Image (cartoon, rainbow, N blue to C red):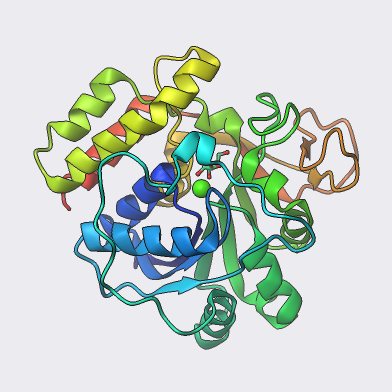
Length: 313
Ligand code: BDR
Ligand code: CA
């Protein structure tokens, strides 16, 4: 099979960085057409900077990076420096990127690419708030039917929330955008906290990154060390979840994951539960299924895949 053409829409973020590296390390499975940055974990200038740092780390300055929306559709931006640090990629000291940011707006790149490629051949991989994707759908509704699939990290059902008691960060930041994407009718695969909280780093898993003896291995180990401290304090878990790489891992080996095709709606009104993904896991409504909502993964298989692929960089 030829590799799937993908666009990664991202707000790096250490776990976003690992997702991008996994994609760059897997050319037989995915062809990364471009990276579109969005405001999320940190403001847009930093996410656009960080995306280029990650490409440079992998020696892939040929991958075009575009800056997109700097604020959610209707709300003020909420960021997550408390998790990712002031730069979004805190951990080791990083040099400023030298590769250029593309002139075109990320939303234009998404629209132009979907119009230029044959229908049903481009998969969108959003791993941050859904502002760029929803804006593209609003501006150019003709692209919706051309998207092969959207595989995204966001939401939660059994794990409920990580930014509020009821909501996961990516959906909470721009619930109106999420609603547009979930209602678009595009085949959707969702990696909620229910699965990403099972993709936990452990000392042995981080040691395996470090044991690669490469710049990428050392950097990923240092990033996950940094990122861990927050979740370990918060959840008392052995390590931190690597949320966003689940999206790319699913494209490479969907058999590592288990989920259900169900209805998922987004709460956009209630202050108390804003951004909640109301997932009909138990099939208690007759609302039409619109998403494959993943609940479980083979964590050892996931980390084995990740480590062996990162070893190539
Ligand atoms: C999501 O929020 C961000 O902080 C992470 O990068 C991930 O995409 C997890 O809730
Ligand atoms: Ca992210």
